[in-house]
Image 1: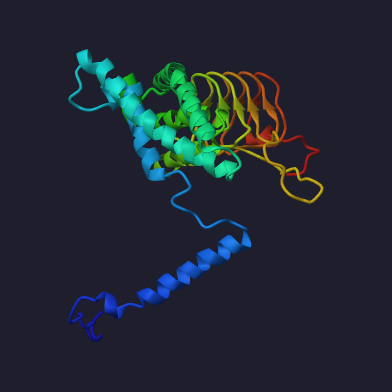
Image 2: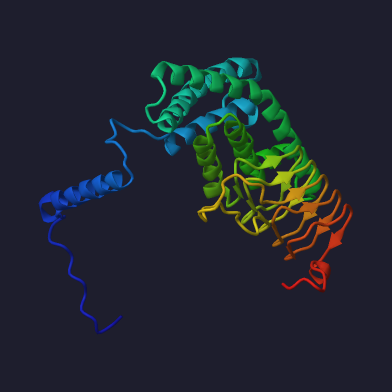
Length: 315
């Protein structure tokens, strides 16, 4: 703005001597010590928790192994597919084993021998690897559902390469398998990588059948105990959430209790709908846009804002 004096340029770049680094480092050390003392944690001997950065690379490698000629390297030839997949699996599963071991070691808190933890990590990753062919088949069903359900889709390859709902489902199918194998922290990190990238928030515990189509996707939330059947279509900004949280005698939230909706086969949920609580959406139902629903609906129901709640139920 005219009339204001210009801001003078610094005469030289700031140096470490210009900043109170020693004081800040000491303050952060004290903050860490206070946290550990308050929560009775031991002084760590190194990094104890899995790395989101490493898991991002692992998922990227597994994506390539699942869809080598679409999500693999640009110069990959069909005759080299199996070699590439084998190399990629060896690299990424070994890296995953180390991340699984970190979570198991952290959960054990020194109560289990290192050799036992290492053997368990190896076994879990082997089980995860054996599930990859079925994960690929489930993802094929998701891709096909999107292609068949979206008139704008020109090919299944376009769906796989471009649709955020498919990106979210690749992460979810992998994360859900980790969740089932008993490494929930790894599973949650993998899920949150997709959440950050796509805006689609699927808890890794959610059970999702074949052929889910998440159209557009931004703002979709699917809770931990949600159960979704086959050939379901969900549009943007849909929430499958909890209505209340059961507590124990001390008032603490009980973890893992079923509290999210059950969506049966061939249900369509349009944009902005909020479905809360352990209710059931019957097979073949259609839930209209911006509906707020806290009651079960029979198979084949057509729910709009006008009939979403009985007259006797306060909103």
